[in-house]
Length: 226
Image (cartoon, rainbow, N blue to C red; front, side, top):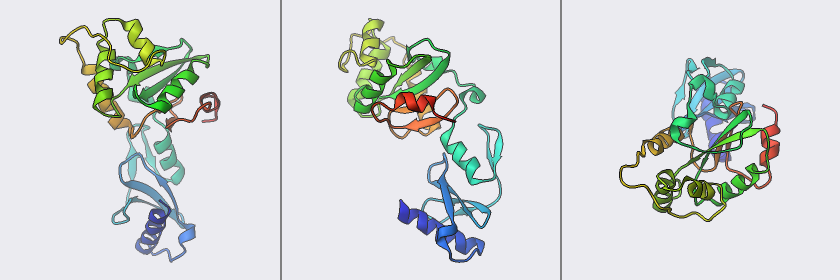
């Protein structure tokens, strides 16, 4: 990663005519596959991650409805997803819900993901939040079978127990082939749109996103500054 950033710095410097002082170039990732924002001597450009292409001009974030004019803007675009501005209706994705607090957190998980299991155990200790848990088949076909069975479960309480880690992940009894699984497809599309490359993936009530999870860190992340 460091080598890639350094190569981007050199290329950006040569394109902008800014000299050869690599250390003065700053970069931040963008929520676009294969692109970073780079600044050298107060000049902002958008660079492909292999350093081949430099995009000049303006970049407008339609989600936040503002132009990206600085690294701070790019970093915020990478780190935040404003679900309210997007009018994202998480309930259309048939989530499992835990908690009744006024602050809502969206979580993408996989039923076989160990760090997801730890996250679910930790969220049970937190008050003041409603957690919307969206199961994905991020870890392969077996996860896909479990996700479908939980969505189509005859016994919703049993499905919730699996989703909350109260029983080990498994395929549960389903209602039949007439189960509407379109919500699972919507989860997949939403995950791709939000840049979910692994689970767990969280979106805090203020839009801050988090990739991955470490045991015991949920409370501090939820309470952290935006």
